[in-house]
Amino acid sequence: MIQIKGENAIAAMRIAGRITGEALYLGGQAVKDGVSTKHIDDIIRHHIEKCGAVPSFLGYGGFPGSACISINDEVIHGIPSKDRIIKDGDIVSIDVGARYRGYHGDSACTFACGSVSDEAKRLMEATERSFYLGAAKAVAGNRLGDIGAAVQEYAESLGYGVVRQYVGHGVGRELHEDPEVPNFGRAGHGIRLYKNMTIAIEPMITQGSYEVRVGRDGWLVTTVDGKLSCHYEHTVLVTEGEPELLTKV
Ligand code: MG
Ligand code: MG
Image (cartoon, rainbow, N blue to C red; front, side, top):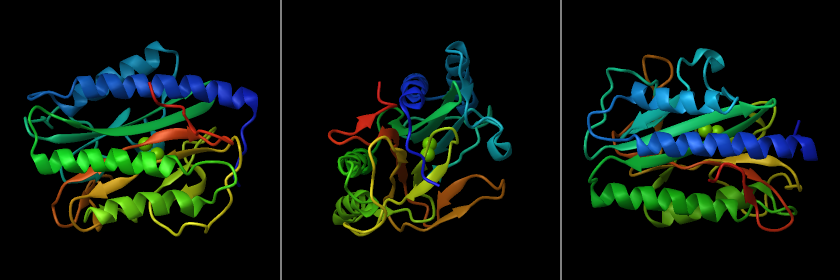
């Protein structure tokens, strides 16, 4: 069931969103040659807990980290590890959630470590741009398919792949609520968007094929063709005008 949030819920989600956005920013600042993904996870967890919030991902379905940290051809759900060392030229996708007063924020971004290839830079920029094109459609009265169509049309016009197997989602008391928010679809189709819905829009854009697979640890999702993947996500409050990005800091 799709939840329309009340004023108290939205107030809590603004705080959860700010904490999430700050944690993601701090994690991104820590992306450096020679740093382990566990170190970044520690920074993120520390910030969330210091703010009186709870890392949404920690223990979610048994996930052992506070953030998902995924490198290069890894799409999502990378488990932080002290043995996983980031190198110059890597692109590092960090996905973070924080729960405050019972409500979640959810946000992700891909960061560059040092000097990355022009191809990687273009993919990062296109992924962020595709998010903003999709988010611009998150207006009351529009339809869900308007968001996915905007993301897909732009990403595919550049020759990139749009991951199908994983999608955005409603967010609120639960980290993943209805509706599913695909990054593909047809404009004018799907459910209608209402004021005070809160949804996570999160394009996962690949350099090659959109096909992905889950690794042996049961979590890590990588591209099947080994090409790069980028992720960009905010928790978005649907309004009658400009959508409010609750996790943007
Ligand atoms: Mg996320
Ligand atoms: Mg999400």
